[in-house]
Image (cartoon, rainbow, N blue to C red; front, side):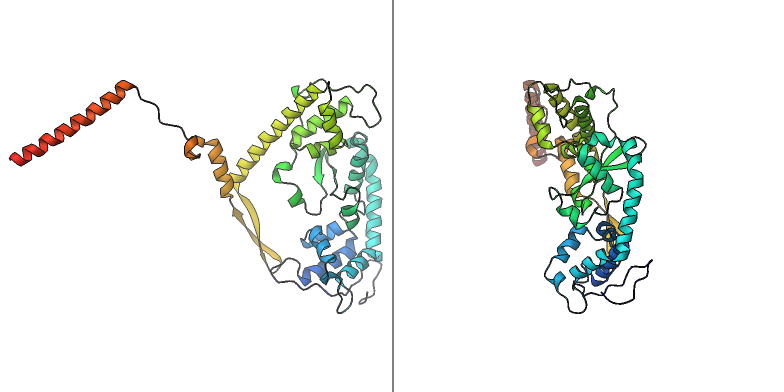
Amino acid sequence: MSGIPPTPSAPPEIRFTPVPRARRRKLTPRRQRQFIAALARTGLVSEAAEEVGISVAALEKLRYSEAGQRAVRGLSFRAAWDAARGCEAARKARAERRREGRGRDGLWTAGLGLAGLGLAGRDAARRMAGDERAGSEDDMRAGSGGPVHGASHVGPGAFRLSCGSANPSQRTSRAAFTGPEPSPDDPLLGFRPFLHPCPRRNSITPDRQRAFIAALAASGSVRQAARAIGASMEALYNLRARGGAEEFAAAWEKAIDLGIARLEDTALARAIEGELRPIVARGEIIGEYRVHNEALVMFLLRHRRAARYGPPAERAAPPERSEREIIDSINAKLDRARDQMRLREARRVD
């Protein structure tokens, strides 16, 4: 690490060897320097990546590549990453985030009912509150090795599921955003829950079963609904298959149907409105344009208007005519043929 001496309020300037990339690629040397500078200032990989518009997954791939560990002048990209994250400015920024997170923990626990989310839900909420590990490489490799999903605050007594993945656009489709949960008096939640004969501390109690069905109806995703109540998918599927849980299984299927209906509405909206895509020049976004998915349009037309746009075998056949109508049609054709023959003979005689 060399360059301008750091001050208590400014991060140090870190000189390193950027990885050479083609101009059309996003990971240009300029963006690599911007990312290292942002990482030294914020101390958080996710924020630095968002600031430069690059996914954490792409940056991690570059970091561990052969070129990312090669230094020609100064540090390598990987060494610069470690130096930026370990500098004094980055440590202070993370410490400030932790203090802010501890100040909000009590409010979040009261407003969101995080005790009902289980250990995984509480940990995810603390990460969303500003834990230094959010979005960092430690998160990407911790636990099961997958991205962290948790709850984020959207209003008093309300929460929504959010994706803490390195690249949320690839992990969560437009249809995966949660909708409104059913009200407590909704018939969907009026099923008879399964009662455990010997409930344990981590058992899926009746309240948690109803919370799961409500989250499933809102998101349409079993995985997201399982995360919402802090239960494993294996435990939920085992509960669904047990004797006495028939009503719980039926409510599960109804909630999935609601998610499928929302998926259909979302697909229809995408087909009509299209999708905005950025116009990038030299690593900068200079505009955007709208693209319509013609394959999605034709898929919806074939299934929603099969009589007109579906395959020939599925199109509506012409109505069948009665025997009398067929005979009348044949006689009419014969009469027209006779008239034409008489007309031609009359012309020859003349």
